[in-house]
Length: 119
Image (cartoon, rainbow, N blue to C red; front, side, top):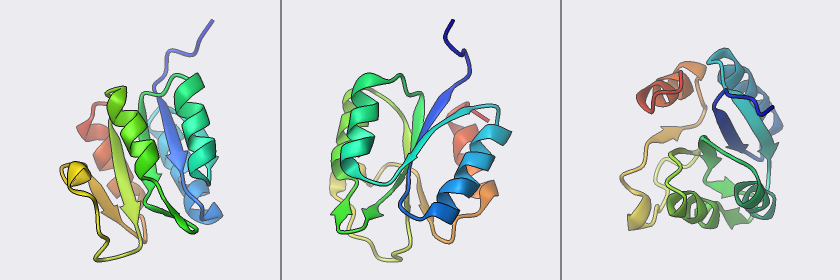
């Protein structure tokens, strides 16, 4: 039987931040999916696993998370963008999405998850 709890994908290349997000997501009663640190790994999950929402680090090494955001948009899956850059150049199609600046605070993630009805 499938777990009825919401499943939140974590795409984050900083291991400490990813672990904090896992704790926050579990604390909200959701199931963390991942974390994964690459666009390819995230796209694989989005294509084959049920995901209720996602937390996406904008910069993953030398790649941006935009293909993952596009895939989630195509499936009507809500997500939040996270970045350490204060002046990140977000493509216009993503500017209406919730945005959290690093360093990430657990309460910021909880607030976003609560706003989409998950926490």
